Image (cartoon, rainbow, N blue to C red):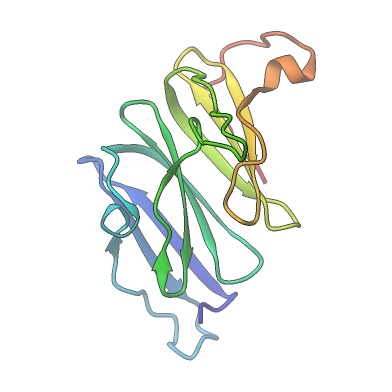
Length: 167
């Protein structure tokens, strides 16, 4: 079981590979040791070179990971103590009833945050500097397609967005 006193590390290397390791704190029985680093694409699926990653832990043992690939798509996976779920393309997710998400443009970065009900909020930036948001339920299914944040705020374009962080 993953201790709540652990650190998850997700890193993208220059060759587009996505890596994960876990470091437990000194209070953990392992004494603060790092786990072996693992290639996430081997566990959750390889959909191309990764250019950006964001991760957040839910209230328990599950880690959520969003990865943006070089072709501008955004992928979501969950890590449980003993397995990874396959990556889902959350931009073009097929919702119950058959509705498919829409193309919002080429993405270059994303941020992921967990809310109290176990859902995760994802904000993503397209190469034209537009900011988008979606929410993924605790079950890993997006609750709606990406929505334009500037439009929802009623401010139109407040400029070109270069970076985003959520919590």
